[in-house]
Length: 258
Image 1 (spheres, one colour):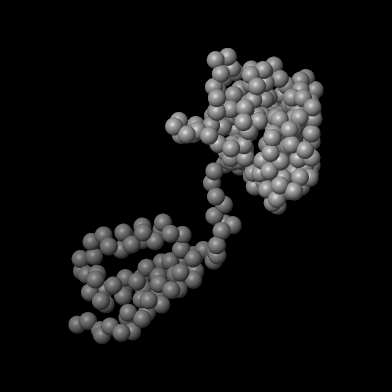
Image 2 (tube, helix red, strand yellow):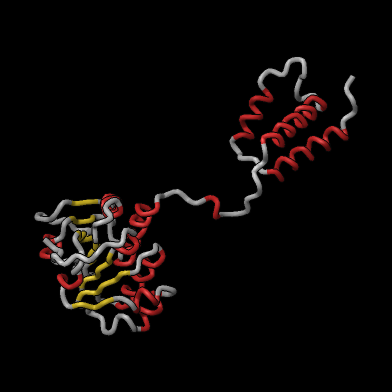
C-alpha cells in the first residue's frame, strides 16, 4: 500500500498535514489554479509528479492563474514518481470521477476530511490525475481510499482545480467546523443589561397602553410574547435606547387617557 514507511513527525493542524499531489498535469494554468484553490482554504503543501507542462512553477499561465497564491506555487516540489511524492505520508487518497472494478474503498470528500482531521498522527495526501486521462489504475489501487465527488451523474465532469477546491473546502470545514464566527462580522455594540432591558419593557408597555394597543386591565399575553421576541435578538444598549426613544415619542404625542 502507498505510502512508504518514512513518516515525519506530524503537526497536529490539518492545514500543515494535508498534502496535495498532482500527477502528470498537462496545463501549467491548472497547476496555478490548484495552488490558488489550496491557499483560499489555508493549505500550502503541493507536490507535482512528472508534470507534462514545461516549467510549471514559473510558466506565465501558472503565475496568472495562481493569482495571490504565488507562494504556494513557487514552494511546490517536483518529483519523478508517486513514491517520492508520498514520502512522509501514511494515508493516501486517490481522487477520481471514474470508479474502478478493483479499487480501495470509495469515500466522499467529507468522509475523507473527517477522517484526516480527526487523527493528529495521520499524514494524509490527496492525489489528482492528469486532466485528460485521470489517474492510472496502479496508483488508484495502491492508495488507501478512492475519493469520488458526488456530482451530477448526468454531467460529473469537474476540472482539476474544481476538484481540488472541493477537497480543500471539505478539509477546511473538517478542521475548523462549519460555523461562522459572528463576532468577526459587522458592528457589535455592548450587550444591554437586565436593568436596561427591564426599563425598556416598562417604557414600551406604557406607550402601548397610551395608544390603545394594550389594555392595561386585560393585558393577556402581549408583554410576555414581546419579551420572548426581544430575548431572541440579543439586545444591545443602543438598541434599547432606540426602543425607549420610540416609546418616549409615542407618549409625548399621545394625550392622556381618561
